[in-house]
Length: 409
Image (tube, rainbow, N blue to C red; front, top):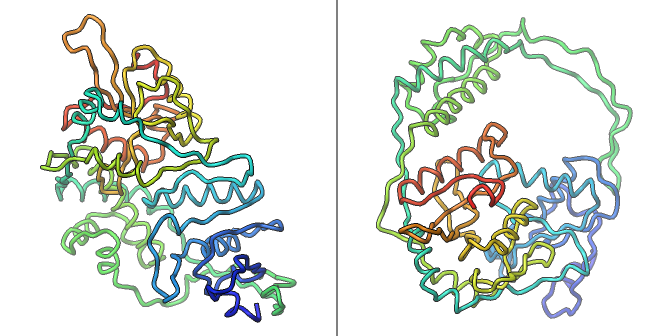
């Protein structure tokens, strides 16, 4: 690393730099594209620091950030425990509305395949009709009654604030040493925890805090606090009180919004079918072990279909082989429905042939999950699916969540 400037010079043909300790907090490494774990890492903080170095946007030779997703791709070659950590971390990001593609574990036999467009099916009347059915876009509007929000928020606050306790502080002592590998801690000792009950505190501006955290106006916040029976806990533990109240207000907003408070309406905009063609011409690639090769070529606009789970794998195999399925499509990642908690990308659109019916073709959109019990889904998943349901109801398309194709065929 003493010759880093020489190694980073584009004129230098060397394209491999081994960096041992430069993935920790405080190091500025904008262009990390591969992380290979050579030893067992047990600290999640260390793992987050290592991943964090690789999630930075790359810079070009002039120091400008690059936003090309083909360049900004982090590959982690990891053992099983690190793989589990990476999966859990991605789930945390998904809960915050950030989507990831399925992670890839290094395998020299798992090569990439090009997903090619079947022009004949793409230009067919059946696919045009399917796209015309599902391509209408919408926008949502929220109808939230203040009195209902206040009532719901007060109910949740009174239910949960009784668990607030006085703050406590814990003192730990340890010997530290700064070595080449970083800061090492030796002989940590824990002293008895003590209470803050006799310490005089300056109470924070709770109204300003809740305004920022909930997005509500001051008058509504004041109304909620006045009607709450638990304001006595504010002096007992101000920080815990504010955090809990903010959470309960936001939970009340979410429950009302995703109940009857959100409505979808059509707008004069459609998803462009030609974008599929443009994507194909630019080149779509994916790993072999997450692709289903189409057997009935007249059923799909592509030669392969990418799946993201074992549930999707079984579903696409059934779509490909079922005699009543006329044509099917894995909806592209840019086919998204707007929701208050981020965008929602449904899974499948397909045509079922109906016998002895005036309308021989039934156009369906489906979301595949491992369970159809909404109570077992994460709140974000459930709310996004509910938004999808309202969107497709508005444009007149049959939509539901499902586990198996047999539920429709």
